[in-house]
Length: 548
Image (tube, rainbow, N blue to C red):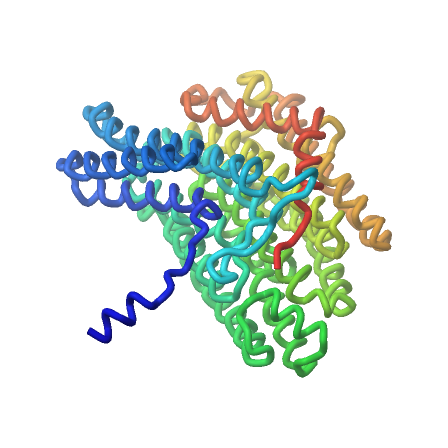
C-alpha cells in the first residue's frame, strides 16, 4: 500500500521526445533489422507487429498535431511491413532499403527540428537541454545530425554491390551502420560526461566490427584489431580525464563544469590534467597528430564503403565533441588549450600533407589527407569564437560530402581490381570512364580547396575565422599545407587524364545503380555547395550557439 502511494506521489519526469526523434527512428530501424535477421524465414512475424506499432504511433502523433513526426512514423511503419513482402524473393534488399528510409526520415526530422522545435520569435532560436541536461539541442547537434545521417545515407547505396562482390553482404551490416550513426548523432548532442562516453562507445564498438567485416581478408582483420586496441586505450584515457573532471567539480553536466572551472572553484592542476587527458582521448577519434597512427592502416584494410563512412562521419562526430568540450567545458582555460590545439593543428596539416606525397596506395593517400583536414578543422576550434564554431560546422559538412564521393570513386575501381587500388590503376581512367574520372576529379579538387567547390568555401571559412582570432601564423601554415596537398591531388588527376593505361583492363568498370546514385548525389552537393553556399552558410551562422 505504501509502495503504491509512493508511486502515485512520484512525479513522472517530462521527456522532450521531439529533441531526439531522429535517433529514436534510426535506433528502431536498427533493432527491426536485427530482429529480421534472427527471425530468418519467419520475417513476417516481426514485420507485421512492427508495422502496426509504427502506423499506430504515427496516427497518434498526427492526432496530437505533430504532423511531420506522425507522417514519418506512418511511412516508416508501413514500409517496414511492406518491404518484407515486397522484397520476398530478394531478402538481401530489405536491409539497405529499410536503412535508407530510416536515414531519410531522420533527415526530415532534423529539418523539422530546425524549422519548428528550434524556431523562436523573430530571428532567434530556442536552444536548450533535455533529459535533465543529458542532451542538447543547438547548432552542434543539428549540424552533426545533418552530416552523419547524410553520410550514412550515401554509404548505403554505395556499398550494396561492393559487399556482394567481396562476399560480406551479411544482414548485420546495416544494423551496425545505423547503430554507429546513432552513436555519432548522440555524441554531437551529448551535454554531460556519461552521455558523451556512452555515445562514443556505441559508435566505436559498431565501427570495430564493421572495419573487420571481411573475415577472410587478413588486412581487414588486422585493421579491426589495431582499431580496437588503440581505441580501447584512447577510451580509457578519455574516461580517466572525465573522472578527474567529476572529482574536481562534483558534476557531470558540461555547463556546470564550465562554470566551476571559470570561477576557479576547483583546483587548477586536476583541471589542467583532465584537459590533457581529454585532448589525447578525443584526438584519437578525429585523427589529430600525433594521435593519428591508426588511420592509414585502418583506412586501407577496412572495406572501402566503411572507410568512406568513417572518414566522413566519425570526424564530424568527434569534432562535435571537441567543439562542445573546448568552447563550453574548458572555455575558462582557453589561454591554455588554444596554443596547444594550434600546435596539434600545425602538426596534423604538415604531417598529413607531406606523408601523403610518398604513398602509392590511393586509400592511404586519402587517409593521410584526412589527417591534414583534421588540422584544418582544428583552426576553427582554436579560433574560440562563434565565427569559428560556424566555420567548423560548415567545414565538417563539406568535407563529409567530398570524402564520401572520393571513396565512392575508389570503390568503383576496386570492384574491378578486386584488391588494393594503387596509383598505377588510375592511369587512363579518364579515357575509359570519363564520367567516373570527372566525379573523382571534382572530389579531389574540393579536397584541395579549389574555387567553385564546397571544399574551397569550407577552407575559406575556417581560415577567415583563424585570421579573425589573431591566428594568422596558423592560417599561413594551413595555406602552405594546402599547396603541398594540391600536388598529390593533381598527381592523381594527371594519372587519370594525361597518361595511357599500362595494360588492357581484364574487365570493364561496373557501376551499380546504387553507386551511380551516390556518386551523382555527392557530385551535385560538392558543386552546389561550392557555387551557392549561402543557404547552408546562413543556417550555420544562425545556429552558432552552444546550449548550456
